[in-house]
Length: 348
Image 1 (cartoon, rainbow, N blue to C red):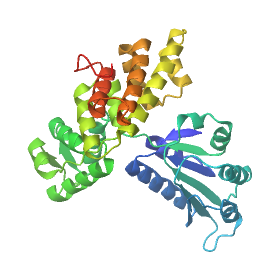
Image 2: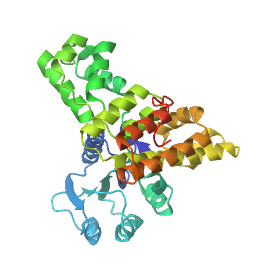
Image 3: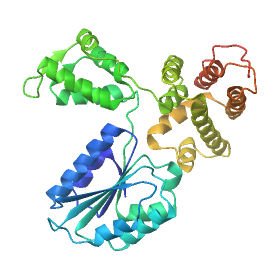
Image 4: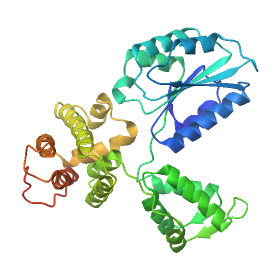
C-alpha cells in the first residue's frame, strides 16, 4: 500500500508490515518519519538494528544473508537499507523480490531512498513491492503550506507568533526545512519558550533573531512559474544563479515540465478531464494544483512555443546563438508565468 509521511503515525497504529520503503528528498521530514518508524518497530520488540549502505559495488546477497541469519542480541531486528538512488539495478530488484517472497517474520526491512520517479511507480516490479509492504512518500512543503507548517512547529515548542512574524520566517527559510527547524529551536532557547510556558513573539523579534537561510531549487522555480508568480520567479532565478546552478540543469527541468504540460493538454483536447489527464501522466497529487493553474492560462500552441524557445537557449548556452542565456531563460520563465517583461526576446 501507499501512504505519506504525514499519515505515517496512523498507519503505524496498525499491525506492522514486513517491509517499508521511505522515499523523498526532504531531509528533515524523511529523518523524522524514519525515527517514527524505528520507534514503532522497537516498541514491537525489534530491538536489533542492522544498517546497510547500497552503493555501486553493493552485494545484494548480503541482504538475503542478513534476512536469514539469527539475531545475536534479540529475537527480532530491523534491517535498514540506505539507497543512494531510487533506481535499482537488476540484481537489486531480483534480491528484493526474492527476500519479499518469504520474509523472515523476525525481521522488518526498511528501505530509505531519494524520491521515486512517477513512471517507476506504475511498473509491475514496483507494484509487487508495494503489495508486500508499505511505500511512504515524503512530500516537500511548498511555499503555500510553509507558513502553516511553521505555525504548527512553533506552537509545539510553546511559541506563539502572529501572521506577519510567520511570514518573515517563511521567507527567510523557504526551501530549507532543516534551517526552519533550527531557527525555531533557536527561538525557543532565546525566548525561554516551552509548551508549559508559551511565549509570544512579533515580526520585529523575528527579523532580529532569524538569519536568512532560504534555499531554492528547480522545483521552487517551476512551481512559481506555473502559479503565475512573476516576482517569485525572478527572486528564485537570481538565487539559483548566485549559488552557481548550471542553466542547462534548469533548462532540463523546464523542458520536462513543459512536455508534461503538453501531454496533459493533448489529453484534454481529446476529451479527457484535466484531473484524469494529470493522473494518466503521473502528475503527483501535490503538484496538480500548479499544473491546473498553468493549463488555465497556457494554450497548447503556447506550450509548444515555449519548448522551441528553450531549444534556442540551449544553443545560446553552447555558443551557437548570440544571446545572453540567463536573460533569455528569465524571459522564458516569465512567459510561462504569464508575465513576460521583454516585448521582443532575441530568441522568440
